[in-house]
Length: 308
Image: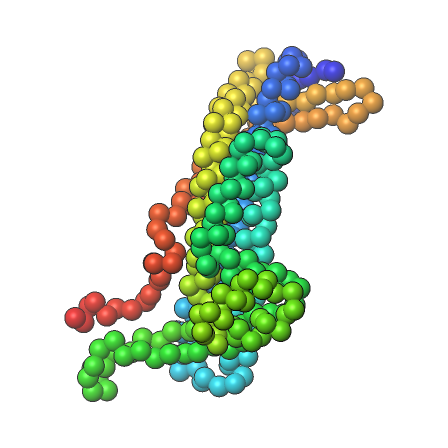
């Protein structure tokens, strides 16, 4: 093995030998830190898709206020748009769950206590949160049987009484799935169908369950962060120190430094040292901080308080 650092200064390439042990150490730290970045990226994808679903609901309601006709054709368009949004959220959610388990297994081992704790936490979410159970089953339904949204309601709710000049009305878009449609899928989880029938509703308002589903995955993400924290913090510190240490080669400041290990008969291994990656990770973690319950907090453009 031959290990060295390479960087760019003006028009020349500078190199300096490093120990093989140092390369292995930084390479291992990079892999752990990248795993932490992957966790944040997967949640960011999920939250972005959930945001787009919520904005679709707001947009449909607002277009109704602005005079768009409510008829069978507009209902078809709205249903298809919302089907796409639900599909995106549930696919991103399943991706998060599957890859979180893979990530924990890779870092701690398939039979480790940390992986067992992770699976126990996720199973508890499933057992105790109706929205998480329901939307997990619906995710399988969408993948293997049919799209989800059967119809949309556009309720107009009076929020202030009065004549036409003073009355205040709030418009919503409510996506619905019929229990009968789900039951036509012979592979739909029977226990979930039993729960649906016990509720006595012919159709499900999908807004609360999808918000609870995403909220559960935010909780799972926080749990995974805590599991990773010790390893990720140590790996980041080592990776960051390598960036500082190798930003200068033979007294010359270099750009885009990387550590390279060459072994006879094999492709070289390379570790890029990127300060931008550290900043990107910081931004992701801040962006992914959800300090409120999505099931209890929803967006509104209403200005009702201004008229009380």
